[in-house]
Every structure is written in structure tokens, then in C-alpha cells.
Amino acid sequence: MNLVDYKVFYDKVGAVNGWDFSSVKCISEGEKRELYQEVQRSCGKTDILLDIGTGGGEAILSIAAESALLLVGIDQSSGMIETATRNAAKSGLPNMRFLQMEAESLMFPDNFFNIVSCRHSEFYTREVARVLTNSGGIFFTQQVSENDKSNLKQAFGRGQAFGTKAGTLKEQYLSELSNAGFSDIQSSDISVTEYYQTAEDLIFLLKHTPIIPEFGRTEDDFKLLQQFIEENRTEKGIRTNSERFIIKARL
Image (cartoon, rainbow, N blue to C red; front, side, top):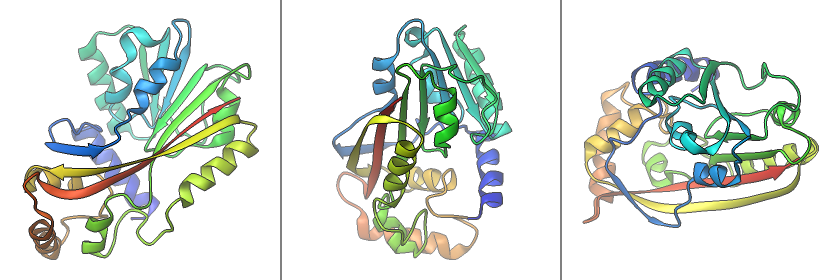
């Protein structure tokens, strides 16, 4: 999926669903870490937080009530921001703002935020460094590793980062953060086994993410999925894996 196609896909999903997968029935086994819980632990009552690639705001809204003075979520997608704005209105939280904005050109003053977070979205290290306060500003990111959903991508012969060496993206970001002036850079890997309870749960995931680009465009995709389900069905559900990495860095 090229950049243009991805943006069209992302905007369409954003307007309909946001980045909300709470309806998907899936259990997981292994170490479980939640990025925004770690973000919340680092926030003070007077802090200002920026969330890059906020999607429908689901994650940042979950910690907004008591975490910081002000939380700002941005996303390149108008559809995602529409959903985030609706979600914020339903929450009734007064300290949330959502803005459509490109991550490569953050329309904020220098040294404005105490915390910047970014989950499963592109970010630009020098822009993050510019808007973070240079007296202890903290950046958190969680990203999808190359080996995520490895058996699923093998079954389809294509997929997000398919064929890319594991660790490539993490090493790229670690180098960029160091070059942008960050210090005390810490990274950790998260690997869990996932069990999707029904075929419908797995189909919802594939139709609302770029794991398998353009999933469902042809009848063959559903035949491949059916074969995958038959080969990976267990008593716990349809087995695949989730691979992530988290980076925490200070200025």
C-alpha cells in the first residue's frame, strides 16, 4: 500500500470507526504493557501533553481525566479527528483538544509540551524535540514490529513490513532520537500470542488495519483467510502473534 492509498484508507476507517477495536474479541498470552499507562505515570497535574497520530482519541481519552492540565491529540486524517471530536464530546472532559495536523510540521511553539506520545503512527524526531520542553521533556512511542502477525502475512504472501528484517524500524528510531538530542533512551520489546475468538473478529481487524494491504479486494483473500483459520484454529481461538516495541526518551 503506497502512501496515497494508505491515507485514503486511514481516513475512511477514521470516519467510520476511529481506532477503536474494543468490539473485537481477542485474548492474549504473554507480557502485557500499555503505553498510555506508562505515559500517565510520567504526567504531572500541570503538564501539557501532545499525542501524535491520536486516531479517534480512544487511548488518550482513557487517561485524560486526571493525567495533565491539557491533552492535545493530532492526526493527519480529517475522518479520525471527526471521530475524536465526537468521542471527546461524549466524554465531557474539559482538558481535551483535537486538531487535524501533519506530524512532520507541528503547529506549536518551541518548548511547549512536557510530554509527547505516539502510538502506531509516524513521527518526526526533530519536530518532537522542538516542541518538547528542553528541561526534562519526555517522549514515548509504541510501534508495530516487523514480525507482527507473522503467520498471517506468510499465509497471504504480503503484509505490513513483510520481508523487512526484524528490528529495522526500532534501530532507525533509536538512531534518529539520539541525533535529535535525546538522552536516556530506553527501548523494550513486547511479544504476545493472540487468539481471535471468531472469523468475524479477525476479518474486522484486517478490514480496519493495513496488516494485509487491500484485504478483501479479491475472492482469493477470503479463501486464503479460510485456509489460515483452519490451520491456526485452537481451543483458545485463531492463533497469531503481536509484536511491538516501546521507546522512552528524555531531552
